[in-house]
Image (cartoon, rainbow, N blue to C red; front, side, top):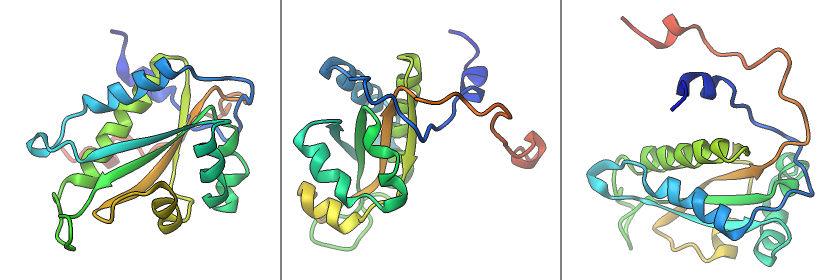
Length: 174
């Protein structure tokens, strides 16, 4: 394995996508498979994913539910993935797990790394009408559509100035 820290430094989130790039079903399966192997509290695995490749009917149903800010760039990605969290115990407002959202985030990070290993990039966002997405996709009430990830090949170059991060001493209390 190469230096993962360097790979992560090279990661960035495009806002312009190669509209000609198509992901094959086996590639989509590889992305979800990587997310499936993420750790979770008590092995609860409180996540599920709804995949919408560009051009299919699910994608067409999803795009109008995006906020205008995301609708400018997200539809051109090869794939939109709705990241869904098992948030509540069915029929209640009780937390299913106090770690469910954290665990979903880890699984999405695994998917992001798998995408990078396939020469793809991703951009995660929350700019969508959550209630409309859940209703349109038939998400059960105790599950929550937390975010969407756009995945594909960028149609732009990475930022020349690189990404800005807080200094290491700010995030590492020693």
